[in-house]
Length: 501
Figure 1: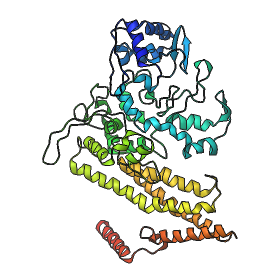
Figure 2: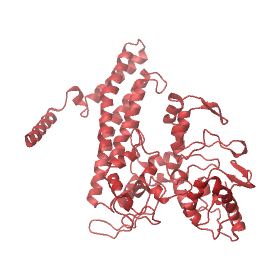
Figure 3: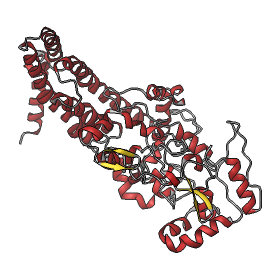
């Protein structure tokens, strides 16, 4: 184990003159952050030089809780001789990377929760369709480094890997390959085998709680065309309230419980991570013990909206081998409701979820399910290489960009992202690009002279007909149900009469 806890205890005992903590290997043992009675001689030696060589880092550390607890450079960066990324610096064995294993010396519960989260698995994108885009479609093998003699894509290195995390490659002497470091990606694969980067959210070397609670902290990764959570948040009433009252939210408080320490606005951390107070029973609400702080940000999410068709979070946790596989979506939704109820009454909360589920159901039934089936039927009529066909791009953006925006927009109450950036774009590209391209492939296949392609074209043509004549799409062929058409005309006239000048 990298920088073994027993080794760490030994040198703390030696340098600080006391036995700080003894941890056994038993999995049930937990420890939490603690302070040292004095700064170690090793850290004092580090500070002597770095105070002048790296003054901003020294100042950041000096303003941190680590400084006040006498936890310094050596306590975090210490390594044992022979470790993969260890190198000798001024007579001390140290490592550049401070991994979750290192943070676990003091922050055991937090790192365990983080290790069980999807955040820690972020680097698994390295083998995904998204990374294929960055490495092959967008990229080249032009960036050559010692660890990548055959070259690697700069688009992946400076794009995907910076949020999802790189697999850090160690060079002789403990130096780190420049294609993989610097990197604070949330799922970084570290030389000690651990997954994740605590500094993705708790920036070095201040490790400010205020910063980690600020929505902009999440915005490094949760933004853009396919997962614009930060933009959605700032559009929502939650984000509007945050901007108005951010100086009154007590975000630097050690105890930060919604309804007790602040009440004017929530941040991302409020809903997904932070503690809630206990509630007594009322005629409209059962008693609640409240929620503790968690570093598993998926424990309050009841839909995973990443795939083309949304799945429940326990399903995706099972695929990743995470213990969340045993926590169903209803339990997670109730946990999020426990947060909501601190600012909203029960009917408001329950009705919100009716609206959210309704949008997910609309997207699934009208676009995602038929779209996925049509795309599958079209594959025999396309070139076999992904993203070498117009339809590959159209369908990818419908679900990966626009469909996600619609679902995420509804989940966070961002109406513009739900509609104009979401369902409008889904519908526009489904009808104006996907259907015409499918019809083009049918025509090509039927006239190809290839019996297999002709048969595939006929199967696709049949499915297109079934989809477009279904109640959700019949309008496109001017076959809307007469009763529905008449009702819509009546409502339009009623509206016009009501507001006519």
